[in-house]
Image (cartoon, rainbow, N blue to C red; front, side):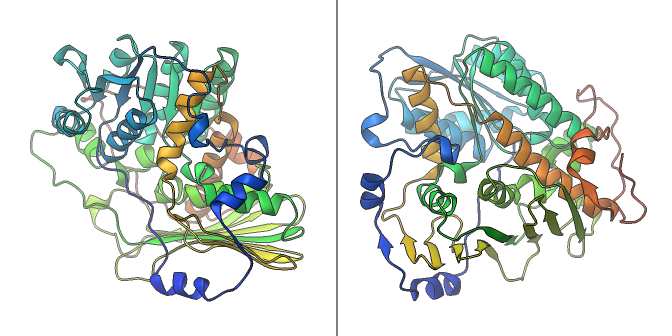
Length: 452
């Protein structure tokens, strides 16, 4: 599929301002020496270099990639780095050209670990099932998220270990399906690692541990922002393309495929908000949103900005804003205000990570590890050790945070967690083939669009 957008970082000015603060510094080595291995409390393990193969095992792990765009190809790259005995043996994508381009690049980089024959190249909307049935041990799911619930269900049913890129669905029925699949994965002792990569970022793990240990006191307000420029430009439609081919090619701009950018991209920010709150869901939310810059028909039916306020049962409010508009100030930061201090992720991708107030603390990893690589290190280490990771419930709930906010913005109504979870609005076609008739729903209008 087409390339997934990479996380943006803060402006240089913001990073420079953060560097001028003088809280007590904590190095990565000091942090790791003075901490228990970060795991249950943070909902994601820190894998230290010496722990990568907790049990030596020279058996080959056969890996299959579903979705060969930029994010999928990156996931395959990281999987092969994570385990010297991992071998990519199968690939699947809706489009032949995307698959072959990815395969060529991976073969150049990993000649000894890429063993994909012509017979193990699967193309089409049903390619995922052919790959799952082809004899792989580990499946990397990186197609547009509208397909995620079906692909995840099939992989777990077949007993595969899984890396599952975020988000997990684009509507509530998809979330409910994912939650059922997650339980099946637990029963089968399968590893299921989610692409919520900040859960595997050492700096974010460190600041979350400090917050959970009381470094900012009781949380009072949470503010996350993910304001960027636009993502890739839509592909012009070719005369021979069906509606389905055109929309899948331009998946980002259709809500049923991407979930809108609050679900596809800014979901990382909401996942960190959820993390501060120990993954307890909010009770309700209200939101604003619309499209001002991307108004042409080729931009499908998604918005280009959102602003959401989440209410929690203990009185905490979470404020989130996200925007994809060219020529505007970009920011990707998180601020967690407590009764005794403030936690600040200055640049969400690489830090620094700062707490000021009663406790002054700073974490900056130098050199910074790659959180995308950390995900796969954790996945393959869990498979080798026989101690499966299951990111399932929180990955589904964090995704629903974005869907819930989108519902509130699209309708202009207050939306409760129960309304979001139990929504009957199914926006993904029940059957998908290249000839499935699929019209483009109108751009939602608050006050007119209804909650279903």
